[in-house]
Amino acid sequence: MAQTSLDLPFFSEAHRRLVPAFRDWTRRELGPYEDSEGGDGADAKLIFQKLGQDGWLRHSVDAAGNATGRAPDLRMVCLMREALAYSSAMADVAFSEPWLAILPLALCGSIEQRLHYVPRYCSGSQLLAFALSEPEAGSDVAAIAATVTATHTGFVVDGTKTWTSNSGLADGYVVFGRMPAQPGKAAITAVLVDGSRPEVILERRLRVLSPHTVGTLAFRACPATDHEPVIGGIGGGFQIAMRALEVFRPTVAAACVGFARRAFDEALARCKERRAFGRSIAEHQIIQAKLADMATRINAASMLTYLAAWGSDTGSQEAGANASVAKLFASEAAGAVVDEAVQIFGGMGVVTGTVVERLYRHVRAFRIFDGTSEIQKLIIAKHLLNT
Image (cartoon, rainbow, N blue to C red; front, side, top):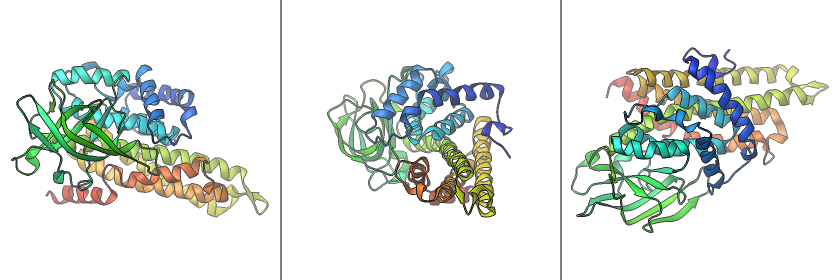
């Protein structure tokens, strides 16, 4: 069995060299944030800045050639996200939310946009947010109602976005809206909005089980940025959103692997020290069976995750389907592993603040965020049926 994801056959020497150093960095630098539940985003922003200042964010985009628009090294991003999730949900949030926001620019932005935004992301000096979902348009992206209207001076955004990361904190928002008089998906356009504009109104910060900094934002006749506000051209927003989410999904699976590995390690240590009926519970076959099931799920989830990331990096035609397979299986598997860890801990497993109790709350959201398990099944079926 693979003891770590790096034991799998998908990685280069660069991955094998960098990732142990990154894991050491997370243990050394991010320990103080392990029990953070800060939905206000303050801790997440500090971690994001640390990741930039210490040079780690540049490994998550094509920073060396940001004028080329090449896709990121997705295996590296997944390895980073797994390590961060193993550390804490807060560390994962701090990295993943800004990374999703930079993807539309890194993948589809103009040369000038990439040269402007990517280095600022890499340094941790500019926090962007991805504003796609709406109260009546979550998984159904084509149903978004926010508008992007061309004026004689630029573009204006009107509408409400929810589940937006870093709401009220972001320096800028990648906003997806509908161009009036354009049909269907072709109407959706992605624009950049300055987060300091008074027309960007934080209506509500959402309190959720995991420490995600999400909220509901209103854009009230809000001007887009003055210079190059449109990403990927008029009407390109739907394809940009779908592309970004497809690239993002294997990293969601990687975070789930990180959560599951942490839960397994906590449970393994606990079952060796906890005693029942005169011996450690690790000696009871029913506990051994639980550990075997947990390890099997983790190994399968890891294999599917890095198969999807490898496929994306090598241009596989199955990359989209594999991304959904990985996200579906890993999120469901992580939920099962964490649940068993709580069971092994017994009463201590439901004491607020213990590691497995936090994981139990934090991992649940991953079967919903970034495309529910049900949506992943539909995507997989479409690939199978070629529809």
